[in-house]
Length: 290
Ligand SMILES: [Zn+2]
Image (spheres, rainbow, N blue to C red):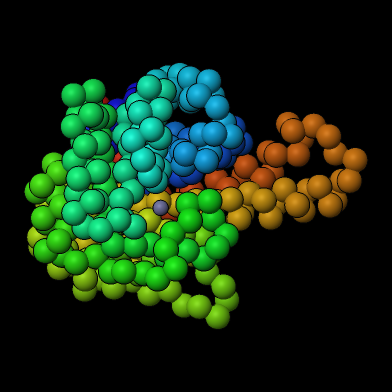
């Protein structure tokens, strides 16, 4: 079933688990995350970045929606990192049930203004809105981009932004980056700051750049109130490592249905592992009343 983010995450918040938001940049990656979540009876957020939408085309979204409607698990179709009104309107027109407006690079006042404008458009259409305050780092190997410098989220400003915009979810910066970390770099989440933000903000919190962080920190962040974790690079990395290996072992391979299944299986192992960290296994049954 296709639901919006507010419906999905209110249940997650109540029951102390998080739902993964997986970037769907191709039909194969859609299979990876959706099939694995269905197998484990887990709710799912399908995230499409504006660049990914450009590549996939609006018509492909029709296929995703049909697939989601026919699914036994709750599915949110979410625009990841929309940066302007045109991108958000395109997503809403396509039938996304949730959009992110990323004004994190703007001044605080401009971020509030843009976010409020999007909430006013989306709310009457039953589309949820995610805002971002603070900046997520950029490791240079992910389509989601990010900032050169991480600016940690200020808890009182977070409350002010939520109060003034009426946004449904808030992405916070507590030390994560988009992409995969180089070997010499040890990511560390500021969980103390997460606790503080949680004291000020009641809506579900979102963690971007959730790939390659220590498992225990992600699991702890979920316990402390993060309800959505964005995962992109970890799955793509597993998927494409295996794809490269398959092609290397069979240089004359031509058929997608022979090349991709092993890579899809590798991606699914990552999804299964994340579902455990998020305490999300078998949580679709909590949505039967929807
Ligand atoms: Zn992100």
